[in-house]
Amino acid sequence: MLKSIFTQILNRKRSNSWIVAELSLVFILAWNITDYFFVIGYNYSIPNYRDIRHTWQVNLAEYPDVHPLYRSEENAGKALEANFSRILQTIRNYPDIEAISISERGSEPGSGGYHVRGFYSLNDTSHYENGQAIRLDPQSDFFRVFGYTTNNGKTPVSTSDFDWSNPNGIVIGHSVAKRLFPDGLATGKELTDGNKTQNYVVLGIVDDIKRFDYERTQNTFYLAFRCDSSNLRNVKISIRSKTSIPDASFKEAFKKEMTNSLQIGNFYLKSIVSYGKIATDTKNSFGMTNEIRQRTYLMIFFLLNILLCVMGTFWYRIHTRREETGIRKAMGSTNRNIRNIFLIEGLCLLTIAMLPAMIVEANLVYAGLIETLGRENLDTTYLPDRIFLRFLITNGITWVIMSAVIIAAIWLPARKAAAMPPAEALHYE
Image (cartoon, rainbow, N blue to C red):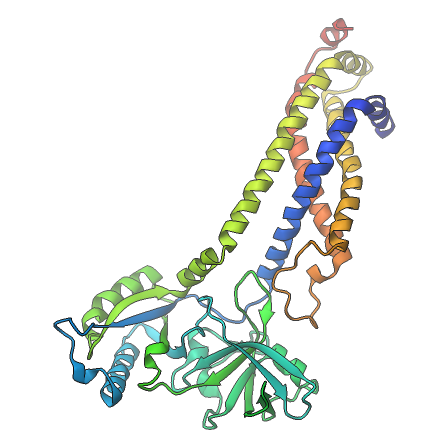
């Protein structure tokens, strides 16, 4: 059968060359989009040892000095700290909350904030790593609120698991520990900052996290800061609600019950926002959602064009080959055999078109025009970093996607041709 099909393709090489050219072009474009989604999908599959489900950001505001409830004596110093402390205690006492944390603005997950710090290993200053610096108040429980773990997700972590009595204590991510201390013994060792002016003691190690779910894990450093009147306006209050309570119910009940309770001093409750929504909003503001949407629409457009092109071409081709269909049926071919011949012919044309397309793609890869999102941990080799294997996989996926479209395009005209009685088909001869 294949020999006969390739003979038919060769005999119609002039008309087939246009089909092959169009298939090649669309194959290249579809492969580029497939490769992008392959990398995105793979990054999503990498574990993120941080859990933002059932987590909330509690946003406070202050009355302006022209507001009737504003009191100037509550606006600074000890009074400001006392009021803020009362607010935290009021939130802690709320029965449906599991944990509360105070962190510096920009340290909360999914917000888009990013503070970069770099550190050397004091024992060997040739080892240097930089990454996101997350500053947290150790009197609260940042790690528990956001579901941090250690031992590859096996052991939950609490901020109280580490001894923060040393003001220069620091907790580091697993990747940082691996690079700065190749011997695997990081706890108790010392780091020095990028200027080599301040030393820090490693209190412990937590699992790696991802800044965004569509990226890979990153380097992270966790440092302590003390919340007081000089910085409390620059902090974020985060809470974790009980998993047994639906998020919508918790949010509604919290706003209803805490609006009056959190009117302390000049502070009042402005809003409560889930970190899931914050992450989604950040994804939108960074253009990631729009980029994914655009590439999805482009893929649909390309495949729809192929569908219409191949369907029209094979409808005409099958119409002009009715005598061939009649002869095959007269010689004992079943409807299924006839239908399969046209389907296989379409797949053969796609496979032929795939070969020049792969040559063009290989040159794009060689020129470095194909990106790999979130490639930070260069000493960790992920599947998308194996360029040749990734090239084969993404081309295979593209072939499967386009094969499905071609089968869908050929199915109807091939089915109508196969259902034609032999005598009627031979009549056209």
